[in-house]
Image 1 (tube, rainbow, N blue to C red):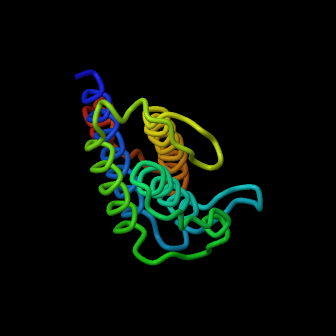
Image 2: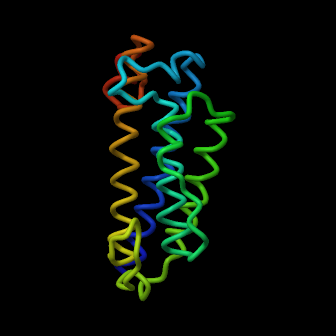
Length: 161
């Protein structure tokens, strides 16, 4: 029972964050999506590609056993990517479905992700946390680039932002 609560919450978190990323991408121009302030910064587009690669690797590969097709360096070297909004929605939706479908018995199963052994529960937690971290970066960058409030919090909606 507790496992189901965890997987349901993790799936809902991914879905919510993917929706917020989509809202950000909708507000940005292609130039803003791919701009980097310096060589040490990632463009929003690269973060989206990175999140998609990470979600696929943790859910499709590690949890389901599909081949690992991730090429991590390409996520950060890309300077354009078609249909980012559709891609993040599809990958996050697929990952949320996979996570929601994990049985309580499987949560303690040992798997290997990125050459590290962990339980399925740990993998779900790590990828959900990772997705949330980069979603925050995307939200912050979007606010900086658009100089507008995004309206995701109730106090901002109440003030008309």
